[in-house]
Length: 453
Image (cartoon, rainbow, N blue to C red; front, top):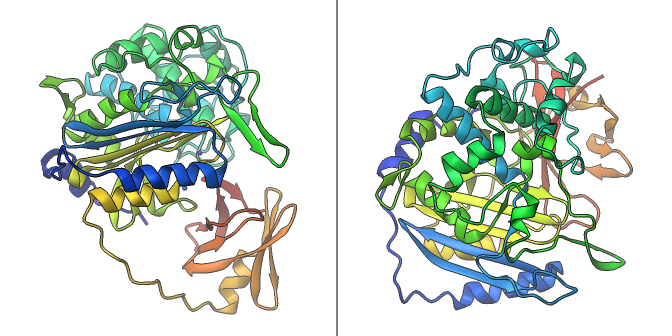
């Protein structure tokens, strides 16, 4: 918190066998440097760090701007940022690894492993939680207690009211759902969630500064999060933290450390000659499990990984956002290329810098402009309605989304539309999801599904 997009066998094979692009030690990255600096200025972002992986190597790692507008501390490749929902990759690796070891069956109801859950909640499977198809609502707060026992308390406080749809019916991104994945890790692994991630992933991958724990993160150079609005730029205070939802989005990491993860994932789980992650785990995580109808071109979700098209390439990764921070973690397994961008302001995804890096490192194919679909009036009428407070209206044959303001929708494919929100320059994808009878039942907006009423 976005028809299946990729064939599972093809994607699994790309992780294992495709060659890396050659990256010369003398490659000129000056044009990329310039684009990043320009985009920092355009977006009024205090600072960011960027890393590029090619094959087994980090071929580019730089910091830009400042980590803290009040101190002027510069960003470096080892500066720690919050990575938000990119944290879900670590949570998924750990639970799927436990399944590979035979300690948990992802297809079994979670009530088998967690006693005393409410009736319907206990019937949800770990597979559904990992793929955001459990029918969970999404309301995980960014601020809460720091005690690691909070994870168990938060998850055991849930009941059937958290479910808005039948499990397995629809994709809807849920931080609460991944909180439950983390609690399963804790129950099955018989250690605290954070300690298991540290032992299984951070330390073996040499991610030596990466942590969930603020009191450890603050011993290293650390970026502050920033809020940027019409009144200016300010440091986000207090620093967000809620141990009850660490599995969903609270990792501190750097681009250098995240690059180690990318290298391992694109090299069949191997890093520097050591097998850190099982190839089977990567294969299972990379299988498309659910269509993301409102994010990314041809986007689907696996287990803690997003799979989509970008600039003609198949990308696997996971973006993240949390108060004052934005994370982009993108891998192109076919070419063993990865791009990691960590920024210290909200909603900063750097499309120009991303495109520049892709064009510099990858053989991109220019795509033909899409042909707008033909829309009949009965289809248009089927979209109109109220979706949990968001209204879809029809005026003179055109559709509009109405919440605080009315925004026109431009159809791009069957049941898919673009809209440009006020103050934004890039379109946002929304989708409509039909039931088995072919009737529109959900609006997918911002990766969340809203039921038609």
